[in-house]
Image (cartoon, rainbow, N blue to C red; front, side, top):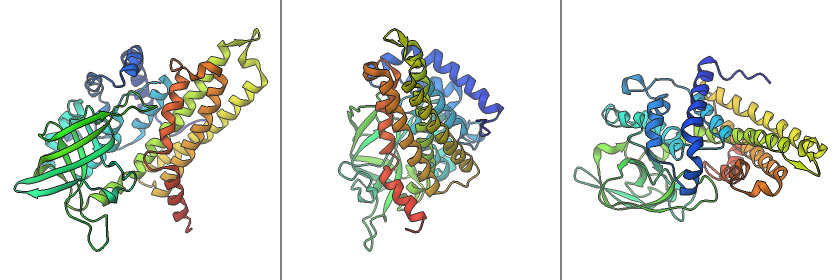
Length: 383
C-alpha cells in the first residue's frame, strides 16, 4: 500500500541514515554485540550526523523540527539492518521531552549543547528494585539540604545507565499526603560524576544486548537545587505526560521489527535448499510468509495512523496503548513464525532473526505491560 506518512525530507533523512548504518555500524556490530555495549564514540558520530538535535529548538543548537517521524524512520532503518544504536533511544525519545517541557532557559543553555553533540548522554531512572511498574511506591529520597538536595536510594533496569553523563532521577522530596502516594515525587537531572553516585551491575539481558542496562545507587549524593526539573513535588504528573509518545515509539519499533523479520526470512528461504529444492517453493513457506506480511501491513497502518495523530497533537493515551498492544502482539507472532522458517539456524545468534526474537520480547513488558495497555483501553471504553 502507498504510504503517506513520510515526505521527501523524511526519505532524504532515511537515505542518509541508511548509509551511516551500513558504513559505521554494520561492520562493527558483531563485536559490539559480544561486548554487550556500543562504544561511546558512536554517540559523538550520531551527534555529528544531527540525529540528537532534530527536535531540539534552533536557539539551543538543534533543527527545531517538532515531529516524531524522524525517530520512527530510525526505528525502521535499525530494524532493517538488524542493529541498534545502544541506549541512545532513551536519550532522545524519553529524556528530551522532559528536558524541553520542564527545563528552564538556564538549564537548557547548560545541557543542550552536549545533548545535541552526544557529549552529554542522558538516561532516566524511574524503576526501583521491588516496585516494578508501581512508581508511586518508590523509596528513593531527595531531602532538602542547604542549597540543594541529598539523594539516597537505588534504581534498576536503567537503559543507557552505564554510559550516561546525566540521569533524570525520580525521587521523593516529601512523604505521601492524605493517602496519596503520588504526592511528593520530584525529578532531578543528576550529574553521574557526583560523589556517592554509583553504577552497579550492567544487567545481563536475553535481548537488546548492545543497549546497556544498569543498576544505579545513590549514597548521600548532593544535587544542586538548579538541577531540579520542573516544580518540586510534581514529578508523578510529569511522568505520565510522555507515556503516549513512549508507547508510540515502542509500537513503531515493534512493527519495524516484524517487517524486518519478513524481509530476513524471505531472503533466507529463497537461498536455503532442502531436499534439493528452495524452501521458498514449498506451499507452507508461501502461506506462512503471506500471513506474516498481511499482519505486518496491518501493523504498519496502525503505527502510521498513530504517528500522524501524534504529530498533530491528537494521539490519546488510550490510542497509544492500543497501538502498542496491537503492534507488539503482531510482532511477537510474526517473528516467531519467521524464526520457525529458519529451522535450526533461526536459533543461532549469527542470524538476525534470532536477535530479533530475543529483542522483541521486552516490547510487551516495558513502557507498560500488555496487561496495563488493556486496562487503559478498557477504561477508555467505560468498562
